[in-house]
Amino acid sequence: MAVTQFLRRGERPASRDAGFIPILWRKLRYYTRLSSLAVLIVIFLLSLVPVLRLVSTAIAPGGEVDLATFASRLSSPAVIRATFNTLDTSFFGALLALMIGAPFAVALSMTDLPGRRTLSFLLLLPLMIAPQVMALSWLHLFGPSSTLLGALNLSPLPGTVNPLLGRKGIILLYAIQHAPIIFITLRAGLTRIPRDLIEAARSSGSSPLRVVLTIILPMVRPYLVAATALAFVSGVGNFGIPALLGMPVNYLTLTTLIYQRISSFGPSVLPQVAALSVLIATLALLGVTLQALALRRAGHRYTAGTPARFTLGRWRLPLALLGWIAILFMLILPVLALVTTALIPSFGVPLNWATLTFSNFEEVLFRQASTNRAFRNSTILAGGAALILAVGAIPLASGLERFSRLSQRVLHGMIELPYALPGIVLAIACILLFLRPLPFIGSLYATPWIILAAYLMRFFALAMKPVTAAIGQMSRDLDEAAAVSGAYPLRRMMTITAPLAAPAAVAGALLVFMSAFNELTVSALLWSSGNETLGVVLFSLEEAGLGTQAAAIAVTTIVIVLVLLLVLDRLGRKLPAGVLPWR
Image 1 (cartoon, rainbow, N blue to C red):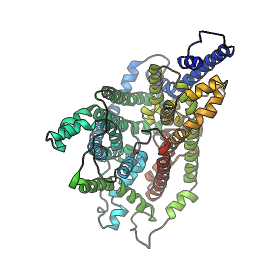
Image 2 (image 1 turned 120 degrees about the vertical axis):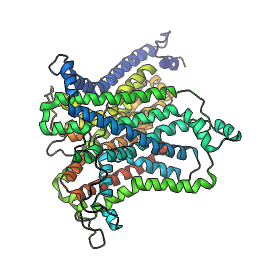
Image 3 (image 1 turned 60 degrees about the vertical axis):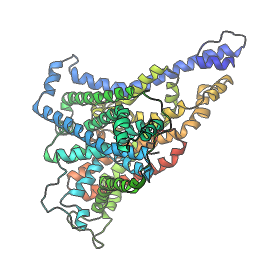
């Protein structure tokens, strides 16, 4: 008992009568310091080094701070216009996402709506599908060459401009892509509202609508602010949607402006785009800070009890039908548009039994060298990042447990920093970091290793979250008993912590793989000849007018994501609560 108590306190035992205790205490202190140092080094390399390199290049390109040059790069007309477009589309996209996600959050969290779990799963799919895939699906749904609308004799007249191109289309797609963020964040607040408050208001004669307006919304206002801020941040860093919907009509946001300048001038404009990246990072971090402050205010405003639940009565089926209609228009119809486009030989050919073909799938999966490489590269890079992070997350999460609560919050903030920053900002940071030769490894620029390094930095937080939650719920008694019995930290890790945290590590690896498999934001600036990823090839095929082949790639990635999500759902029973947002 005495040994267990000093192990918990991390203090030296008062008595040295037990001969092995001083030796055990010294070894424990040594291994604790060593593991803590290792945790700090990994977090520093993956989280802080790229950000510091980016900032230093932006404000001190010649080695000395030059704020005048930094300001001049941000005050050009093109940058001002792109900044306004970024703020405009992100703000109104977040508001529209709030209008979509908030009703779903209330309906699926606080009512007896039938099919709640299935609707939650489907509503979250746009967040799991890559932005460029979502944009492509909507372009093929409403364009003049829409195969789906053509089969229904509803397609626009030939030569009609696609209504989704430009500002309004970007705002709409931001809203649909980021409505799940609103839903997840707001549902976390709604499930904390005690049933007693709702029942007291209802027994006093208040209607369900009045209860929502006067009790529920005021109580979850911090969550509303936090959710809207997160949706805004996601819009600021989004590249796939404005690239496909804005660039064809020269409607540029900050991310697409950076892409254009790098594509046109190469590494020579790195100081300029570094300044733009710092601007994007500042906008994103302001949104993240607002979200954190809002949730902090929501901390302990009331005691959570049994979650409140409304009985819909005769409105139960009509509201469920309305929810399914919304899912139909937001998700099912765009995906069907992709599928029908992938099943025709070329644009303009109507879909029927005579024209139906799988040649596009055969082309991109088996014949075309670039797409074959892209599938191979994306699988290897995403799988490699998932495996490395899954293996490393367990010892890192265990090491974090040894820090104080305040230190843990600071370190978790550092871990989440690369994920909170827009992907294109991290890509610029990686170019700056790995362009010049490094000791022992040389330059990683124009190699697949720079993409792997970016994935490790970008998705570090995704791998850590479920493992940290799992280890935080473990009792320390087993580990302390093994330590008293003389088991070294590595053995305790392999025989106790790792087996118990393995399901969470697998879940984190699947989340990393799904996120990295068809992403575009990071790899758009880091790919090189022979190192293409799926997101890059899909974007290139669409730009080259090979939309049917791009649709085939998009459909394939959606199927892969769905399969992985179903695997995650089956694994969800063994995971800590809150890891999978639809459960």
